[in-house]
Structures are given as structure tokens and as C-alpha cells.
Length: 273
Length: 288
Image (tube, rainbow over all chains, first blue to last red; front, side, top):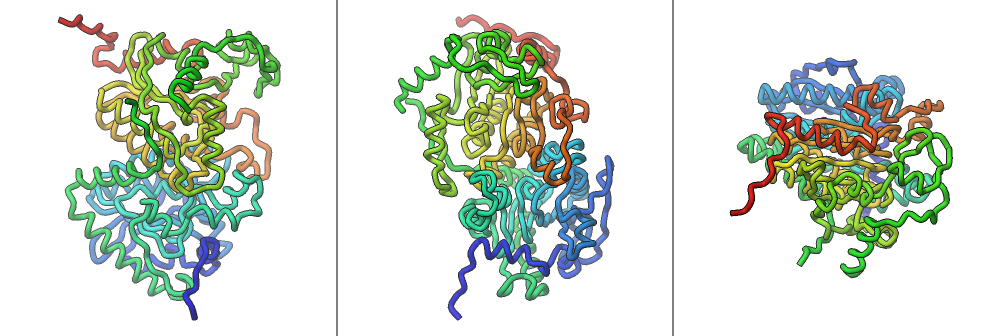
């Protein structure tokens, strides 16, 4: 067969496939001795974000992940992977804990976006995301992130301020869902596919825009066709990312983390004569 | 556009003539109509209900900075089209012509009651002051300038959120500006945000929520998600005051609500209170 060219919309369909593996599938394949931690210590425990301590390659790490459900019941529990402010605050608590004990932080992004609701607004969804961007930028321990499936908007970015970002081959990362994009800019949500194909949301796009650093290969047809191989590929990339960042002096690490984001943006500039 | 033309447009905006040409202002909060002259004499605040209406960045600077003290920085920046979104360049040119701005934020240095500070003002008339590369870059540079010059930073925010037309690049401006805010904070710099109508989306979820002191204007819309999106999710109508400045104060995300007429005084007081001994700016020593 000739090389099959997947459109961005094809990739979006792959990551939305009902059998797409979630962090709950990968966790036992990549890490050992996982101890889950609950709660933000302010309000509650948001199950849309899973966090805890475990070992990677024998060494202690903190894992923070957005959790998609694998069926209706799980999805109800994890709110379709749409975190409330409590979830982001739990993430921050665990990140600060990792900083204290000098463990690297590994984040897994997989969300359609932060939850939009009354409680989320009352408890400061905007502030919770902003605080994570601010704190992760200055967290004095290595942080690496992996987009497993959907990287939706600020809800994804809240776990995406890191030293290096990897994306699964079919994963997408976008400022808004393609549907939302079509609805906002063309007042027509049905043009989702068209939006998807021009928004530059694929892993390759994210690399070319300077947002992602690595692409993790998926088996033909998508990660659900061979979860074990995908987990192995994720492990290899994590290994590489942790190795390169753990050796750096912490101030150099923070400078390069800041500059990774500082550089992003395209504009022209006329300097006054 | 020629520099002279731009300069003239800016000057015109600063010396706006107030002969009523536009139809009377209809308040979006109380629906009462007010003629433009009365409204402008009242600092563009609805005399009936106190709603602080949306004003241009030029008007904001004029009513905030000491006369003649404002010097603009980074004014040469303008947008490109990072994801090649059809029609984006045309949209930008159209907005530039309509507003006399090059982008949705003006930054600079000024004094407020003699207190020198870095200032940034977002203007919702320019593509709803959405944050793309230029807004992100100018805000970031304002943070960096404040840090370098050891000056307080005052940002008047207004925004519909991330600039969709710039895709993922606009999302990353949230991380960039928040990182710059963190660095200013770590250096001990004072950062005051004034949330004006409307401050929403990616701007609320980044630098707007990170001030040491967060001020809001009365009745401003402040929130993360759009009202219609939430109503669609929960299948219910939301109360009128949902996501208002008053709602944010009640829920603990705003320090104070300040009327426009007291804004200069409040900001300059706050700047003084953040000096070790609370002193006023020491006048510069005469050149020898």
C-alpha cells in the first residue's frame, strides 16, 4: 500500500476513538510502585486529574495526568477529562511537593479543555490555570510533558509549561476545539473538519511552531492497535527527556524553560529611526 | 500607513472633539440611553447605573497618566499570520485603520500623580483585544522593562481571550506572559492589574489573574469561559451578575472595585505603599 497520508481531521478521529488508550492504561506499563495522591487541600479531589508518586526506570518521579474515561461510568467520574480549578490546584500541590523532594515531574495532557461551569467560575478557573503557568515556569525541578491525545486550550497548557514537550504521533494541541474555532470565526460549527485542517494542530505542526520537541511514534492505525508498543515508545522518549534535563544546573534549566516560551510568537518590528 | 498619518491619528484621538456625532450611548447593563457629551464628561461611566463602559486605550492613557508624561514603547510591532489563516492580514489592516492602533495593546512609561511606572492598556475595540503574538510580546516586554528599570507595572486588561486566528501560537502567549510575570515577581517588582470590561478567556487565565494587587472596574465582565458556553453546558440561564466584577470580589479573585474617577489616586497610593518607607517619589536631583 502507498503511504497513507492522514489529514489533521483523521488524526483527531484517531485520538477520539473509543479504544484510545488513556493514562490509566499506560501507567502500569511505564511506571512502578504508583501511589496516588488526592485532593487540592482547599476544596476537593478532582478526578479529572490523577497524580501521585511512582518510579520510572527505578527512580522516584511525580506523575500528574489528565484522565479520560474508557467508558460512560469512568467518564462520569472524571468529567470527560475536563478539570475544575481543584484539579489544577491538586496538580500544583503535587508539583510543589516534587520540587521540595527534588523529583522530576512528568505531566500527561489529554483533555478537550478546562471545564466550563458555574462552580468552575466561582472557584476561579482562570486564576487556577494562570497560577499553574506562573508556578510551573519557576518550578525548581525538571518538568516534562506528553500530549497523549487531545491538548485542548488553556486546560492543556496548565500542565504544559515544561522543559520539553513530546506529543504522540496522532495527538493534537490547539487553542480551541476545531468545532469552537469554526463556530467563533465562521459562525458555523458544522465546518469542524475544515477548521481542523487549517488550524495546524498536529504533532508535526507543534514541532514546527516551536511548541513540541519530540514526536512519539504510534503503531499503524493508532495507539489503540498496540498499547504495549506505544507505552514502550513513550518510555523511551521520557527517558531521553529526563536524562537531558536532569543533568542541567537548575538556573540554566529555568532559563531555557523560560526561553522556550519566550521565543514563541511571530510579528514584524519597525525600529524607530 | 505613513508615520505622519499615524501620528496625526494618535493626536486626533488624544484631542478628541466631543461634538455629539454618534447616536446616544445605550448602556448594556441598564439599557438607559445617555448622550455622548454627558457620558464623556462622566469619564464614560453610565450616569444611571455606574457601568464603566469600554474606552479606547488613548482615552484610558489620557485619563490615567499625568499630562504629557506618557512615552510609548515597542510601538513598531505588528502582526504576521503564523498559521496562514485566510483573511487575517486584511482584518488586521482594517482594524488598524478603524482604531488608529497598530495592535490591541499600547505599552509605555508614564507617571501617575508623579509616580513613575510602566503601563500597558488593552483596547477591546481592536479585535476584542484578543491576545496574539504582538499582544503577548508587548505585555512580556512590559514585564521585562519593569524588572529592568525597577519600576512598578500597571496593566489595564480587557480581552476576549486568545487570538483564534493565530492558533497554537496565541495559546503559548499565555505561558510566555505568565512566565514574565513570575520573573518580575521574583525580582520583587510590583504588578498591579486593573480588570476592565471585558476580561475573559486566556487573558483571565494568564497575566490578568497574577497581579500583586487586582483592581476591577464596577460591573466589568470578568471570567474564564463565555456565558453562552456555560449556559449551553449546564442547560440553564445564569444570573445577571454572574462573572461581574462584584461576583469576582465576592468569590475572592479581586482585591477591590474602584471607580474610574478614583483610579489615578488609588494606583499612585498603592505604588507609594510598596516603597520601603511608603515615601513619595523623590524629585530628581538637578543636573550639575
